[in-house]
Length: 312
Image (cartoon, rainbow, N blue to C red):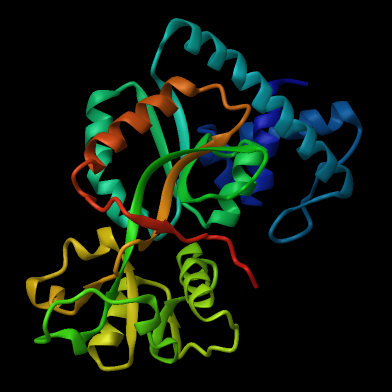
């Protein structure tokens, strides 16, 4: 049994396809299949049920995958220890980013980071908070950028910035600029992101805290802020946006924005990682680069952090 064989098993378990798994680990499909068959022969068990489409793990295979993941993760940490002792900032680093942060933050820091640390091979994946927590625990990713606090005992959080919520409503256009209160939001007209987005949970928590009730009905949900803005433009309601999503709006659309009175409701965005993470030199580098580019972009200081965790 070898570490390489276990990595091949994990790849097939993830992709449920030998060809896709081979591409993922950069070997030919016959080579991968041969090594897994060799391992199954050695153990005298069947790890995968090849009669199923897509391929499925056998019951024994499920147990082997759990242990294989631990073994592979721990073997990778040996190199992590060496790199950390040498102060080397390089190697593969897998990071997850929640969908409501990816399109705004990534363009702000990625080029800077790649130029400053060319030896780091970032592997970035858009993931929901729920998937991020799962992947951090099983070692599928090294770190993530997500809304916090998550209050998870196995995950450490480093705050990167606080991002206020901004109201978008075309009915504001042409009216006198003034800040609004949370109570001014008409929840029956509020357009929200669909389920699975922690930003939606933050907005729900914000409205519940203001009214102490769960009887509100929300008119429509969508998968992107761009769609919500277009729906609002059509007179279908109002929506709330993270501050960074308002920066690239055309001047005409910015007339539809209103900021909250202090303390402004906001989300806390953090760099998070498993408490046993060893690639701390890369975590430190990411934090420094992101904090450097975000400084000045968000000038709000007096904020109230709204939980991203559903309180249903």
